[in-house]
Length: 126
Ligand SMILES: [Zn+2]
Ligand SMILES: [Zn+2]
Image 1 (cartoon, rainbow, N blue to C red):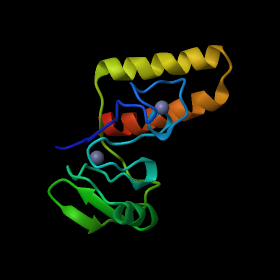
Image 2: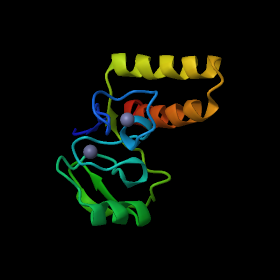
Image 3: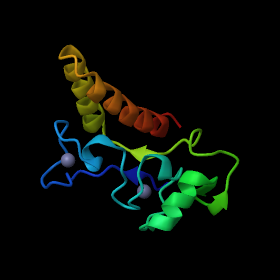
Image 4: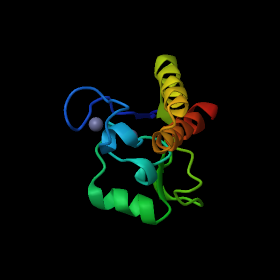
């Protein structure tokens, strides 16, 4: 099934870094459909989703599920189980980054990273 693919490029150039605060570095963003966080559908539609449609996904129960296509679901974005493809390496890296940030007391960063990881977990658990 098609899953969202986390972006790897930083908006300021280069690779995603945990020291950067741009959207690509701090939010769950899909490089295929371009949606992020609350505007992410359950499965990746596999093509670019326009701004208006992203807003609709965010504000209504519009969702995309593999085999079902675009439809109004029973769940809003709060309960949506977004599926992200994530390699074991990427998962380990994210966990390490959280531990580092915790040790150094960077709590804003910790909560941001944990949110990201929650997206991943929801994806891998299903
Ligand atoms: Zn996607
Ligand atoms: Zn960045």
